[in-house]
Length: 301
Image 1 (cartoon, one colour):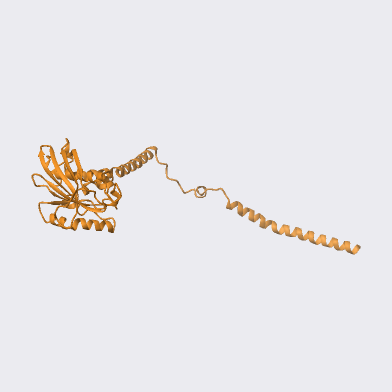
Image 2 (cartoon, one colour):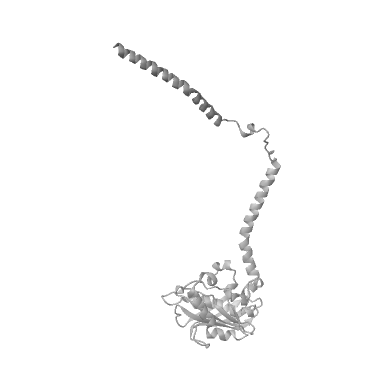
C-alpha cells in the first residue's frame, strides 16, 4: 500500500509540474497571436496612416447643376435624333423619289421563286418589244414609295410577297401622247384568290383602278388625280399563278378630268393582245393641292 501510494504521489507531482510547465511555455505564443490578430483588424484608416494624402475639394453646386444639365441635353438630343430620323427619311423619299430608271434596279428578289417570276416579267417578248420603243417609258412605280411607308400601302406593301405579288408590276407608259396609255405586266400568286385557284375579283378591280389612273395622270395639269367613278365588267375568271397584262388608255381629257378605259389579259408568248378577263372604265379628277403630290406619281422622269 505504501508503495502504491508513493507511486501515485510521484505521478501527481510529475504530471502536475509538467502541466504547469506546458501552460507557462504556451502563454507567450498565445499572447503574441492575439496581438497579431488585433493589429490585422485595426480600424486605423489609410488617411490617418498617411497624413500627407489629401482629397480634392468637393465640386460646387453650380458645377454639379451644369454637369447634370449638359448630360440631360445630350441625352434628349440623341433621343430626338433617333425618333426624327425615320420621319426625315420618309420626307426625303416623298420630296425626291427615285427616277423611273432608278426604280428598275431597286427591287431585289427575296428568293429563287421570286427571281424566276421577275425574270419572266422583264424578259418576255412584250416587255422587250416595248423597251425597244423610245415612246414607252419603263419603270416600277411602286418603288417610288419610300420603303418605310410601303407597309401602309395596299399594292406596294400589303399585297407584295411570296404567293401574292412577288415582283412589283413592270410598267411601260406612253406619256408624250395627247391621250397617254400604259401597259403593265405582273404576276398574281395563289394567296390572292377568292375562290380556290381563282384570283379575287376585288384584287383585279384594285389593279385596274391604279392602272387606269396611272394611264391618265400625264394628261392632267399636275399629273395626279383621284377616282371619281369606276365601272368593272368581268368576262372570264383569272387563274391563280398567272402572268397578266394590264392595258389602259386615256380616251378623253377636259381640264382636271380624264376618262380612261382598260382591261386585264393573260400574258402570251407574243406581243399581240390576249383575251380580256376583266374590263373597266373610269373617270379621274385632279384634286386641289395636287401639285404637292405630283412628283410621287409622275411617269415623266
